[in-house]
Image (cartoon, rainbow, N blue to C red; front, side, top):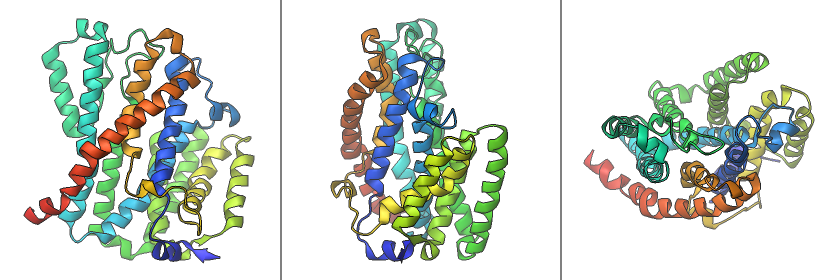
Length: 346
């Protein structure tokens, strides 16, 4: 048995990029049900299997935040300075977000005549500019948008997580400036207290936002305590069995997931001799896939003959991957390459 820390130190590569891409595709699959059928008639597969506890989309987003907790903590600890850390985070999230919002807005204006007939262009333009500055998406959730679709009003509902992600960046920045990463017992204590609070909330009502925060905090704690976390095939199988059993007993699947689901991701990412994909090390399509999937799905759903979850997924997934590839090569990778020159100027 080896520890997570030993694996991180010894492996030049990990599977995190390809795992995030698979999670993004899982979000597309999950969203295909409400996009095709509407919220009231959507029978998402995992939600049915877990007796209304979670969807594939919610599980994927939670794991996104767990992985983000790992990577953002590592980014802070490896950064040379506060400007260095902050510049890397801004360049990673902002440019691609701005282009994706512009793409969504152009799609709305082109394909939604009901929206064009009711909106005031100047007022919408101001709201759009505000969204670009604040990582918001209010301008993309307006009456008249995809009015004939089973899921009207929404052009890119996935974007709600982006400002939450940026707040997580700021959280790590504050924790780092206070020197709390050197006091990892406090990090573990905060994660456990947050988890207990999450259990209390889950027994009363599911709060997706709070679940994301807890998964992020679990990822932070996992990175800080990496030398004490064993990587074991038996533990991974045990965690998988826990998920299978708790899926039939509400709300225990959602309660167990931040810990046992997080461990499964650690095992898949760093287990020895497990290489899911090598090309994903230099080509990260996960962010672009997440940004562009929903508007593409809404565009496909405009054709009533295509309103079946599997059909929408099979059409939208490759189209979204193409847009993600363009986003990575034309936007994300180019801006990330600028971080050294911008850091030197700062």
